[in-house]
Image 1 (cartoon, rainbow, N blue to C red):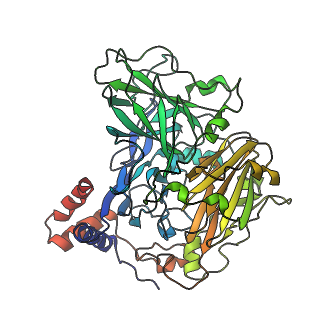
Image 2: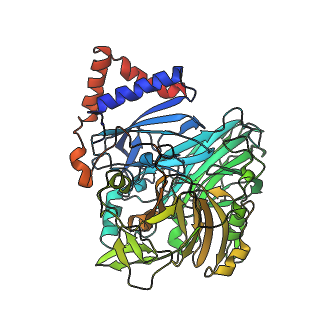
Image 3: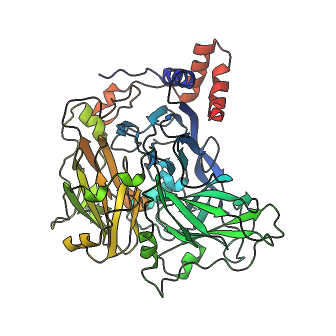
Length: 595
């Protein structure tokens, strides 16, 4: 049996001690964060509802760290249901134990705390975190995760005058539990009620569509300055076109990769994707300017309300923004506009990533493919009387015992390594079917979208190379169109309706990694699987051991020791370490300020 901490008080004491020692002695610093994940009431679209906050904030705080730093995030689950936090796109090298999804972690029970501990390596850029189970992302609980270059690594642009995070996403005024219940009853969710920017509703650009009293986001800037905008689509299923009135968006980075720097007047940002833009305040200040995130690839006037509007406010502005919003793309005249835009996003092969060597030093186009999967989706259908979504005819069933824990303790029958390499001709089924990845192999994955709406797909633990996309059915000769030199490396990619997207990934990160739809309803209904990557050699150098604070559930639930409710644990910790003096509480509150 693995050694465990007996209670969260001990866990907090250990983490705090490790943090303070690390700050003083270790070569790689520790960044410690203490989060209370709880419900709060707010009315972003004018209707009061319950959202998920972190430390009383919606959205949650931005985790701002540097490559090679050790991160410890103590999560106190003050919700009334279990919780997992996943770090979308943040690569936990050798450490899928901290991934925060059902395949690797038992959920944190209500009233308990759990500390995520991992090191950020081999990546830079803009990412975000969110709750990964029970449709909770539809209620919030998300925030930014920024990984900076070390000072010795050059950045391919001048230091901006400010760093601004924007979280955009479609939003329902219904409780996330009600949305979950609708899916469980076989109903479609319908049209969202709006789009939020940083947890706030739209500026009242239209008196018919936007009611009085909506709180909107204002970004304050100074004329002549250049700011880095990190824009994350944290929504449920809607692609959003992002634009700022009269300003160019100079694209510089996406999900841990520097891109060829190109100006866009607008950019389609799909669910789960993150982009960095450098935006120079080069306009006159006669008025404020609109920041817009509007729904794409939708039909009908009811979608007119699915638009987020914030305000860019110059410090010397002479008045409020007024008049029509800047126009979105018009696909009536150019059906391939968005896809051509996506193809234009290229890897900056001369820029350094997290290491001094150029990004293009990894010549992915010359590596032989060892495994190949064509993954086809289909619109949700009834399977065994339940509405389910499928990949290659299989709707994933999450087991009670996480896959990685089952392997660790040699529990058989939890899952099968039989995910098909292509869609099988038989009837669809519900199963726990997993991909057997070859360690240090090179995998080609083609996502074929047979649905009528756009989809996003994400792979935890890796960045993959986006080498091709086109309309129609993928075929062997489609490889002739692949970009084998500067296809951007990222972790989330869109697949257009009736189209395919191809990616290549080097399976060098041992662990069990989630491959899923980022469209929250498709994911909830079963569009996911896992890639199991095992080093066949007996060594402990390619994967970290099971953490001492691991939670246990399913067939391993007898190994779990009872925790105290976290409020009691914090009081106990203060008493144990300080003899009753509230020093620890002060340290916990102050530690994030050190970073």
